[in-house]
Length: 239
Image (tube, rainbow, N blue to C red; front, side, top):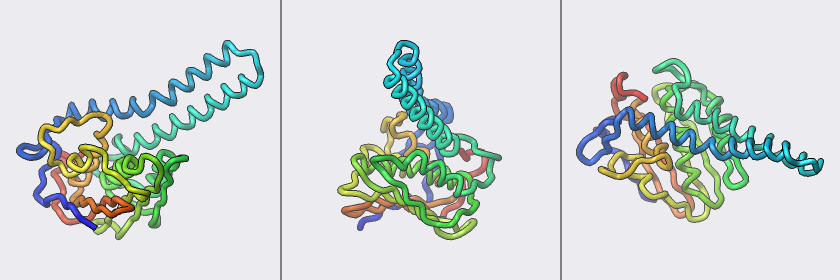
């Protein structure tokens, strides 16, 4: 097993040198693009189902349209709930979030026919940005097992000593291009778009609450570890 650890002196969102220089405006715009990207599919399916109901007289086709609308609306709702916690303000600035709420949101997003979610650890309240970092890492882990696999989230410790493990388990897990560099903020000039913004954002969130991020690889798993250790970023730069 190999481990890559982020330096404890790694700077926050706006960086120079070997890091990524992404402005707050760009971050907000790309995150909004990511939310729209996630919602376009199910919302379009709802519209298609409604259009089918308007023109179709066959009861069987009508039932199929209703099923499509229901399934797509449920998918859109799950994605919105997840995005609210993973990308949004999610409560008072600098506050805490219940990991039980995060588990529900993650399960609705990650638990599919292709990937399953295993969440280990009793519910507890921890720093909001730590929970958001875990949720964004869940998306990263899901992308590491594109065919089939299990995303395993493990909660360790309490309060300021809380740590987390997010693992992608499956046959030959693969890190998508750019993701590890974006997580560790070491890809100067690398493009940051809606497809990988969650990786960059996860690293920013972790650093904002003083969590060290490490990536551990094995033949059947890629694990992202968040452990307390560095000084949190000043409040004005928190996401």
